[in-house]
Length: 238
Image 1 (cartoon, helix red, strand yellow):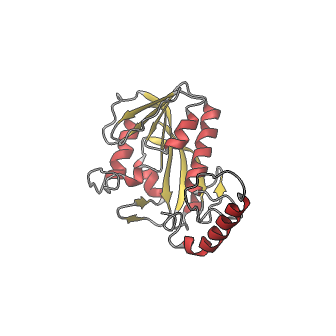
Image 2 (cartoon, one colour):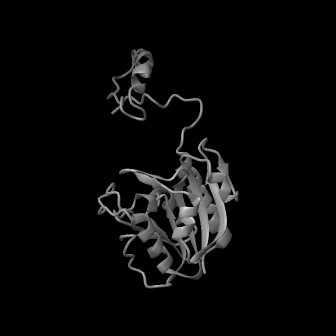
Image 3 (cartoon, one colour):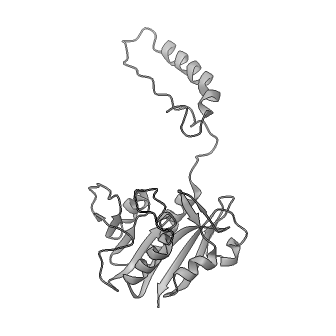
């Protein structure tokens, strides 16, 4: 695993440094009582900057800031990063719904099993809802879900169904040149995303571009030339 993560074969480059540091450390222990040691190489962490996934880092920060501005009494999330939702639940009681429910024990967070295509909520029952980097996966079988070529569109219909008039959906999806990267995800053109949410109006749009730069409250046209960006949509039910 040390050679496979975070990048294949990167460990070969750092292996000499690892053994040099191991020798230096053991020599420094000379004359002391024996110290139990087991080897667990971490060969890809010697970097000048802290690495992060720009889509997931910025979408979590974006959602937190949007919720702080809106201050809902309760919030529901469908399938987003559990790390983000754990933080969100610190300032707004949150129900986390996932095809593979998270086994958590955290105040302010309720985790339940659910299918985004058949949400167990009545029509027009939620006023604050998020779904980050999720609908592009639906129907591709990656997470054990059935194959469905219309998965993203069906998920969009269900998300709109459960929202009250005036309720907000915080949505992120990969945007850019439209295509299916089977079975990882779909990449949607902006016009295709908006066409899936005809019961909603666009309140604001933010974007992570192909160079991992974050653009707050930008134009939807900024995504037209992208290959694999992350579109962040605040949508309101009409």
